[in-house]
Length: 108
Image 1 (cartoon, rainbow, N blue to C red):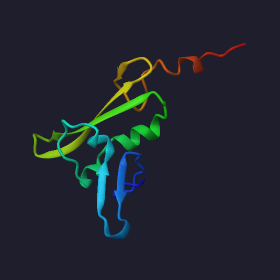
Image 2: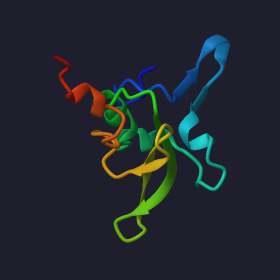
Image 3: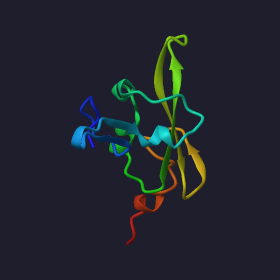
Image 4: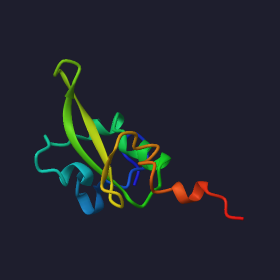
């Protein structure tokens, strides 16, 4: 579904059917320790770009609303992990580096 800022994100949800006005980020809702989500956070959220760059089925994203710029503004902080190798992924757009090693090998 497209966010209010035009990016396609699988975690964004909106429902305007029959007068409803529901908007949510299911990625942030999954983290009970996070601050509340607001639609304005979609503008700078890195999750849609990560999912566009890395389609690995083993990539798991965890997000929270954090503070930025000396605590004056809020932003979405995304942490990625690999479910297959159970490691934290430093560069989520690239991946863990283990899942696709077999694709680099050429079999003769």
